[in-house]
Image (tube, rainbow, N blue to C red):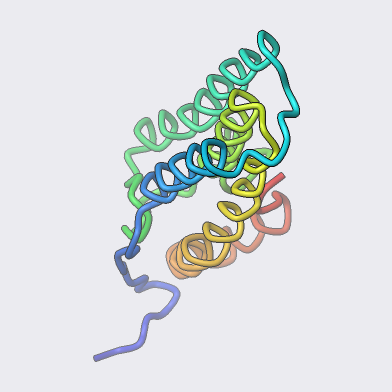
Length: 159
């Protein structure tokens, strides 16, 4: 079996896809809020601001999904990309879908109002940063070479 080259990227499935991490994070936030709320930071009705934050995060992420579809490149992590998308939200972050998910989690934390759900937000970032993004970056480098290297130099991984 040949090793991958710049002209021959390999596709390797991600064991756990990011939406599953997102769902697990929301469930963990709900459990922490319910069983270990530590301190209520935000009172009603101010907690409703969390809904706007959730919607904003999801809108940011879905704007990237729309660009993937427009460029006809796979959305699922681990699948070989057919196009390097660097417009729209990809001008400010290489991972707008994950940034959108993180913003949505912050909205969930605001909506819940207690301190402990906030602990899940950096945990989510850590897991995505460790388990998903490195594979995607290797695949993009293999598929697009110097073009991706220039993009990496120009645009930050998160924000």
